[in-house]
Amino acid sequence: MTRILLATRNKHKIEEIETILSDLPFQVLTLNDFLDVPPLKEEGTSFQENSLQKAQTVYEHTKILALADDSGLEVFYLNGRPGVVSARYAGEGATDEANNQKLLSQMMGVAPRRRHAQFRAVLTLLGDGTVETTEGICSGMLAESPRGTNGFGYDPIFLPNGFSRTYAELTAAEKNTISHRAKALAAMKGVLRRYLTGT
Ligand code: ITT
Image (cartoon, rainbow, N blue to C red; front, side):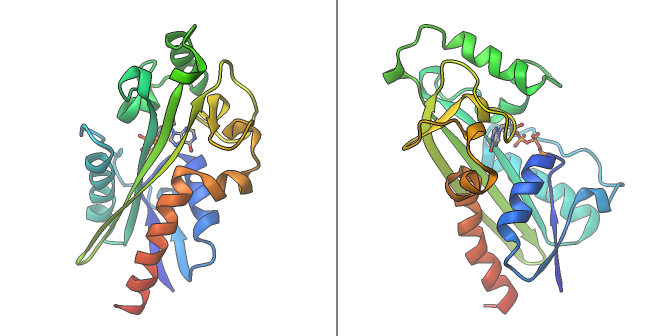
């Protein structure tokens, strides 16, 4: 079976990606299978650059088809922040709670009609002779306070359009139907099917 290596150390991303890819005939590997791969650097200023950089680090060390995800939350009122620094918005090594609290305090008193936000995920597939990128966006708004315990990151404070529940109040299956990552993966699955058939 063709192998694909997920170029991420985020266990929540791994769970979501593995679930969504489960109907494709790939042997999905993670970095737990390759402990000598160095930390994944993200020195770029865009999701695209960081996604490519992560895929490159992993592919160069393993020569196995690599799939990277760079993602984050963009808040319009904050000119797109936290964006590429979503994982470390409240500082290097910050907890999800600290990141959420920082964002909520910056948005305190901001009216609902100005709380528009979107999640974005950029995936890069990198292999021998293959470089492909797909993107997914999920639009919504920021909640006033955290709700729900599912998921990770900013899930408790993000209300996807069409739902009165936060991402963290959705089941994993519901999130995997509408999320930014699900949309980017849906597009990537087309690429992966073509990769498998060599077309
Ligand atoms: P890797 O680099 O190892 O993939 P990471 O968590 O550092 O893991 P990113 O640099 O792409 O990954 O940062 C993504 C951050 O954006 C993540 O830590 C969350 O804070 C947020 N994020 C991305 N997708 C999310 C989702 O589906 N739900 C909630 N928060 C999400």
